[in-house]
Length: 409
Ligand code: C2E
Ligand code: CA
Ligand code: CA
Image: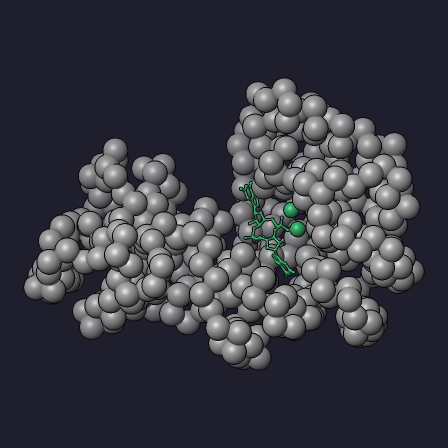
């Protein structure tokens, strides 16, 4: 029996990587009894990777034990990506959930689709339930594309029960290499689906008047964390993404005022990011609201710059302090002259307006080297650091200092 997925794809392969031989035997037996034909088991991560290398992996399900004795589960994930893996993942963990969170973070930033978490020892019934869901999921493919399949009511309860968490991605100075700030990126810690990325729920939230709920939680958390960093001697800015719908109401601005006062965070340490394309939709309203925000001395950043066709005059009038060049003009600009032209033009524009520039989407060393030779001020991207949980920042900082020293050597 071949298991169909929404009539279009099928689970062609299940690969299980687990340090425990007995578990492997048990699971593969149970799965084959259920009719899954191609079940492969490995107790050594590297052998699994060798097996997967060069195969068509779009409809593969991988079940990964994160606590294998002979390979780091996180390292396995990185290497899995290099095989071109595009299927669905189950993460298996024991008592210690820290590694599970890190694995979620890595998987989510690389767009790997984590279908669920399984506890050790893996119960066949639990796995079978997930596999059935996968097969039944209407309109799904095994590709892990944005799937906004959540109900508004379910999402509302996620907000109310505190299932949203902030991840933070570092921003570093291109002059000194120092950490200068972080961007807060919201994630939904879904009890069954793992870590869900914002593309799967921001539209839903905007359409159902829940975007203020997100903004308020993300902002409050960011201000709390900002204080913690400050107390630990890490003096950085924190950026929060704001939807135009947030700016529609005065409620958000008064919420912001109160939070700033209550947290005693210096408004200059807060950056609000608004995307360029949305800014220009209702220009006069935006101008009014942003001006009011600026009166509270918070910083305003134009996000995804280059995607929204703002005019020079509009940019001159808007009270913003930072321009974030969209990643589509940063990544690979080093070997693409037309991207480089847009990139250089954006930097010149920002300079003439006297504001800082941030390059997003720095994915590899070539992107980094290109930026080092440019006039851009700040860099952000997977090459420098993944979005991470608050507790991981100091560890990242130490590692980055070493990597930066090597880049400079
Ligand atoms: P954004 O503001 O442009 O955020 C940057 C996105 O790029 C993040 O995706 C981040 O993980 C990803 N990214 C970082 N470095 C790289 C890189 O080197 N290469 C590539 N390809 N991508 C990189 P994420 O977290 O999935 O967020 C997606 C979007 O969701 C954000 O885009 C932002 O517009 C929105 N968003 C995130 N958090 C919030 C929030 O709290 N409120 C609102 N309204 N929107 C949010
Ligand atoms: Ca942003
Ligand atoms: Ca952006």
